[in-house]
Length: 97
Image (cartoon, rainbow, N blue to C red; front, side, top):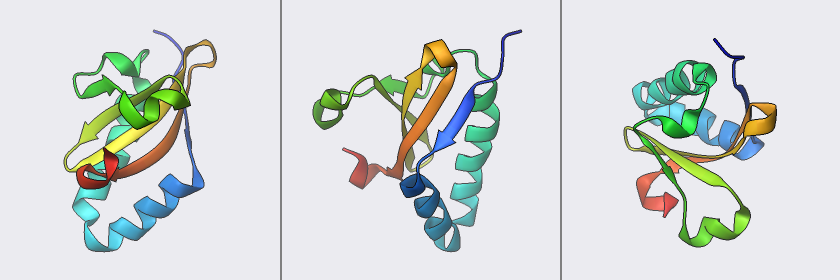
């Protein structure tokens, strides 16, 4: 079994989770659970079934991926050499694309 993935959340993502928790505690709990279990323990989180490579406005920002968790989208940059996933943004579907 490989090393665990290091997860880094930007301040923007942390603030979004804290703010949304008041209105949707169940949905945010699912997002946190997904980050702490599936993303953290997966040797390659880009192979998860709810993952897709981003195109469009995010394409110029580099190697970005999107994971769907309920009505939320987790947008992150996977750096394979360091086994690091930097979560850049967590948002609802309406605001993600």
